Image (cartoon, rainbow over all chains, first blue to last red; front, side):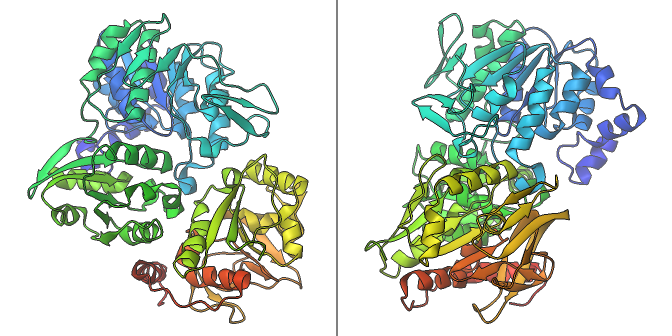
Amino acid sequence: MSSKLSQKMGLGAGGMIGGRVALKLDPQALAHLTSGRQVALVTGTNGKTTSTMMLSRAVSFLGEVATNHGGANMPDGHVTALSKQPDAPYAVLEVDEGYFPEVVRAASPAVAVLLNLSRDQLDRVGEVRTIEKSLRTALASVTGVVVANCDDIMVTSAARDSANVVWVATGTGWHNDAASCPRCGDPIRWEGEHWHCTGCDLARPRPQWVTGDGYLVAPNGVKVELSLRLPGKFNQANAVMATAAAAALGVPVEEAVQRLRAVSNVAGRYRTIQRSGHRARLLLSKNPAGWSETLTVVREADHPAVLVINAHEADGRDLSWLWDVPFERLRGRQVIASGERATDLGVRLTYAEVEHTIVPDPLLAIDAMPPGPVEVIANYTAFRDLNARAAQ
Amino acid sequence: MSTSKVQIALVLPDLLGTYGDFGNAVVLEKRMTWRGISAEIVNIRFGEPVPESCDIYVVGGGEDTAQTLAVRHLREHPGMQRAAARGAVILGVCAGIQIFGESFTRADQVTHAGLGLIDSTSHAGGSRAIGEVIATPADGLFEGLLTGFENHQGRTVLGPSARPLAHVKVGTGNDGRVEGAVQGRILCTYLHGPVLPRNPQIADLLIEWATGAKLRPLDLPDVTRLRAERAKAAGVTA
């Protein structure tokens, strides 16, 4: 009942109110519901939902998995997900960065996965360095395995003090927030894929797992083809992180990879909708690092693009970040700026010298394109609303 | 000008680029090249010396730690301060307004020396100022409204040698009454958006200071539309 009400009120996927009530009645609900289970937590700025889905699929090799599909990633969402599957011996939970310390304390995870850390909605989430410090303290208390991306300086700093770290070279990281060392402030120097601080001993650790183009190399040196259905380098990174985490729980590598290959649609992301003679692929991007990766994915073909931007609380109300996205890459392509803040995007595209028109309604923007394939890239609430309307 | 190309120094974008301030440099560059004035952006990264030969310096906003590191770096490599002494144009945004002053005091009550480029002091306010800002020009310095987005805890008090950029209608700015600072050819503001895409008249003012050229107007329909939209969203008629 309350879950239906939550959906009616537009509070995401309906995972919230049940958990909220449970937490009111029992503030220790999360600790009680995780007790006796093997818990894996997934956090980071980008790729949380996808990696969580991949990891839960991989862990299903071992037994039933309780998981919070669809991005309800705060404690009330966790309580809801765990309550639905009280007998599942495994839990794989996506966790908002801000709530990570609290959830670690309650859930005593067997595995904690830290994907990446970059700027994201600064007026809401806070500064990257503040988050790095709080994650550092939380991860140091983890007695299980910490799976961390050593190509991300902020992640490395956050994970390094933990007792048992598995380092993964994902080949992805957003370097623009990490010119200076998160530990001592001195400049970071890059030499190829390696990096080190010029002032202290923070440096890229030696990875146990390595991501290549379309494959992974496991700690035993065995190379495994990924053959993912999801596009892009960042999904390969998500897949290798998920495989390393699954292996820490005891899943054989081949079994893990085979299961996450099947993932093709994550809470509506990457799915294709048919509409007025168009095949529109829906892509979600929430911040500069995410947009930068998605613009690389859409570069594989020269399809027209509809870009949809809102600026609600959940998106970040300050759109300055649009200027950190390399929209210049879209020059020469047919582009429509859309969403409630289409005009802000229009100005950005003007200065990027990308020809465009403005159509605020994203469905009408798709209709306005020539028939055939269209790439639709939207930020958080824009994507959520478009996905809901497209389903009708 | 020291070279035939107008050089726009983007100062420490890897430390002070938190709020898309790269956009300010892009807007300056494009508004010059579209009018036939040759211009280029020079990135000055953390760990590199700061040249004193550039024509316009753009300094962005940053997190507290980054701001402290930036001051240290700009002191060790005082190219921008030397350029200021010979009348180069400087835009300081958010952290810029704080580090350009005589001093800034953080929420932890520790006072840091600023670069002394403008007559001002900054201190931490009781609450964080976050939201859309609308302000009207001070002393007829520019035309139309100043619009932007603010997100800062600092409050700034100007001394007699600096004058405000604008008077606040909606939002907080320096102190709830005035916004920004102008001293010689140094212009500071708390506003992101970034500030120059939202306020092309400020961009052109800086370009005129730097080149002495009389600029022909540029008609960018999206910019006009955005300014009207943002003013309306803040409840002000443009």
